[in-house]
Length: 353
Image (cartoon, rainbow, N blue to C red; front, side, top):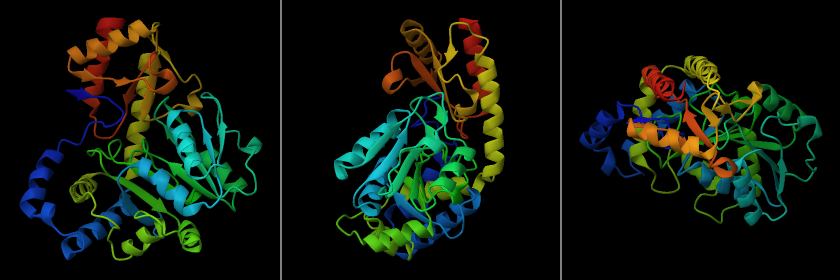
């Protein structure tokens, strides 16, 4: 099966052998307070920083999912409110979840073919955390490095948190321009679901210490204190942490991965422009995602394409949220090989050219 679903997506084929190695090495039975896990955790933190170009003074944490990271950040970094900038389902869900914890939190919606209107954002001075999704998986949009820089420059005194679930480990993100970045690993990391990585700036940790929120097992200050010794607050997903270590050891540095994905995204966008029955959901090339390509058509054709592809052992991603019925999505993640996209092209040329 060729898997183009944007999460959980294809895992690296080497993971099969790594699973056997994990069993043979006894890591599946290792106590999470023991030296074997501590050494593993320390090694993975070093690899994440080195391979993903993360500043050395940022702190790395493990969580169960990006959704859990939403909760951690709202409960541990805000007392009153956060402000959420969004144009799709996942950014909006983060806002809705924040409202349940901090009812005064605010949402600012913008169009899918627009850049975030940084100079016009009505963010009030009492906002403690600005939140947005760098790569909106539901519609295939992205927030560019220039926009993130502009946000950083305009709101220097406010913490900024970025959900990078469909781009971390695929794009060379400039983490220095925001305080918190996080992602689940079932996308660009090429790993099974059940683990998230979160990187926090010294300023974010300082804020967590100031708040000293300790009401939850995943309170950020607890997580920080445990990770000083490369441990977690809870029994972690040791298997996935081990798999991450093995995968990162073999992967090239993020700059090369980003260039490959960028070239491949440009090629795929150009390829699909030749089909009159399919259109790009995102018309503005400047805000199109490099890692999730979203195509729209009438509902009958979308369903036909997905069913035909599945018959040929290819899984296309369903549409999501407002675009659930009239779009499908194609992941452009590092674990998927170039030849698999060539087979996908042959499929579309055969049935829809």
